[in-house]
Amino acid sequence: MELSILPLTQPKARPRDENALAFGKTFSDRMFVMEYATAKGWHGARIAPYGPFSLDPAAAVLHYAQEIFEGLKAFRCQDGRIALFRPTDNVKRFNRSADRMCMPRVDEAFFLQAIKELVRLEADWVPRSEGTSLYIRPTMIATDPYLGVRPSDTYLCYVILSPVAAYYKGGFSPVKIWISDEFVRSAPGGTGEAKTGGNYAASLRASMEAAKLGFDQVLWLDAVHRKYVEEVGSMNICFYLDGKVVTSPLKGTILDGITRRSVLTLIRDLGIEVEERALSVEEIMEGAASGRLVEAFGTGTAAVVSPVGQLTYRDRTIEIGGNQVGALTLKLYETLTGIQYGRLPDPHGWVEKI
Ligand SMILES: *Cc1c(COP(=O)(O)O)cnc(C)c1O
Image (cartoon, rainbow, N blue to C red):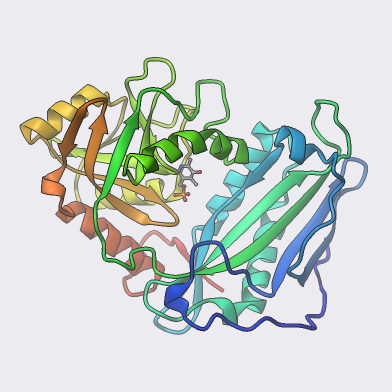
């Protein structure tokens, strides 16, 4: 497929203060777009000026949420070049999400090339200040103007770019987590493993209640036993317990995070054992009380690594590692961001310079 590049007539003003950028509110000048129709396949691939779409009010995505997305970042490295972090993994996951939501796959090589071309054209939108990045949001939506419930025959796939400030503006500090025993994020057989908007819509209520109670994030337990730890907010979660790192296994209810995957590799590189197994909330509460649990942290593209300082389950609150950032958490954060910004060697070949 050809990728056409449409002219940009009205470039926007660049953000004045890169360090004041709120997450996901500022968008670059251009976007990638292509359309799909069952009879034609993907077509019309183009990089066009950023702007609104015109959608039929009956469009399937607006009623039945047939939608998927991805999230990755472009970093400005020390040598001035721009790097993507494991972008092939994001494109592959996009296709796995597409399979789950009965949406058409994209050609991985073409889509990755299109993302790279878009970032190249928008290189000036990759911020320069310490810790900043350009967030990349690939998305696919179902566009059939039809209220019947079935997979759409037409889709729109697009990629938008958003410059973001450093995540830890106020310093790398631990968060307070509320363990929900009322709401669940996903259930076996559901869509927990797909990066699809509906999972987020379903999570808002618990997040709102957590925020009202003064917590930063919700920790989700499994839907069947309401007992085993799954994810925290929109991050995977790891516990440093008895000298090993324990995290929930990938069995369909949690997202296969690329940060999770990278962090587990770095942990093994440090000679620390990783256990992917069911971990109960009792084991965590008991571990924190007895001192066997020394650190906990979330992992995801936005925060990279997010230290957990406090957990509340029902009427019990525990502190982890004295509510301080643990040495392993800090080491993982510094190693991963060091690789991403080209300050450290990249032994696993995760970084793709463009
Ligand atoms: C995107 C996401 C993650 C993190 O995945 P990364 O690839 O590390 O960014 C974790 N959990 C959920 C629910 C997500 O949507």
